[in-house]
Image 1 (tube, helix red, strand yellow):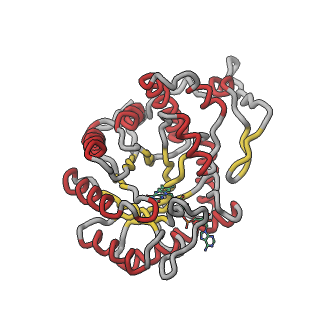
Image 2: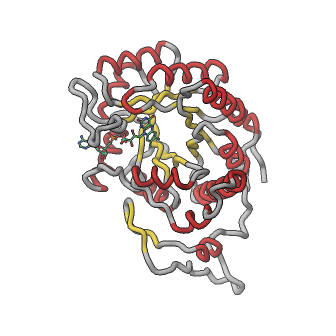
Length: 335
Ligand SMILES: Cc1cc2nc3c(=O)[nH]c(=O)nc-3n(C[C@H](O)[C@H](O)[C@H](O)COP(=O)(O)OP(=O)(O)OC[C@H]3O[C@@H](n4cnc5c(N)ncnc54)[C@H](O)[C@@H]3O)c2cc1C
């Protein structure tokens, strides 16, 4: 940004720093955000955008949730996502439901569907059989994860006879078929990691084992993602690093989730949602605006791929994609 006499404007960071992930970033105030928002720049990508988006769903438990999932898939499919993915419940509790949703989405929409798969609670043979079944049924993309400890247990303990960590799972999957494999990355470091460097080495191990893409944990400050991406690039990792975008439509749930995941929630975000507990429509408008702004900052910094945690609701992802210039059937906006 330049000021009136054309000089480069200094960022007006306030004192106080946020220490998280691979370094520190200044704590931002609302004044900084206005000053830093690049208001003179067009909101949507200015040239024909080559954005790729993907959408994550969870497997439905009830008939009502099932209807909501299919309604969301139907609304988002016309945006021609690169892929959609379906999560795998803690400890493999949704094995069949994940399978059924993945198969049905790919069959009915023609969009490549990815199955999430975790190491928790299963032997290698059991996991290999699940992966083989996906391969035989035409599913070529797996999101390979370690998984969280099952409910009631605090600490992750590898299953005796199972895959210990996600890197081991990636190597095992590659023996079954040449799957497209996505793995998780943590711009603010995984909460159980021994250190940031150990976690960074772990993501490198996953790529060395054959992962084709890193999808990140959600984050609220784009700077964390950009530093992580740059550190991966500096380490010679060339697979796409895709930001996981979580639109905040329920601040309290996101606060709880962020504690579990060790992700930083800035004060300005809390202020934006203050007083909106009983105003879901306004909350949604704010949520879409915040997430679209995050995406715009990422896009301005060269990010072309976006993965949306939809929580099985289409409208926020739809609004954000629209603001990013995506239109139905990949007819993208030319500015
Ligand atoms: C995009 C995305 C999708 C997700 N989808 C699901 C899902 O569908 N189902 C689900 O249950 N969870 C899901 N999760 C959550 C994920 O399972 C948890 O974050 C889990 O705690 C770590 O999984 P991981 O694959 O990153 O594990 P890993 O990469 O195995 O790492 C886990 C931790 O172990 C450490 N570590 C790795 N190798 C070793 C080793 N050899 N010795 C000691 N420490 C080691 C790492 O540094 C890290 O702290 C998802 C997360 C993301 C970001």
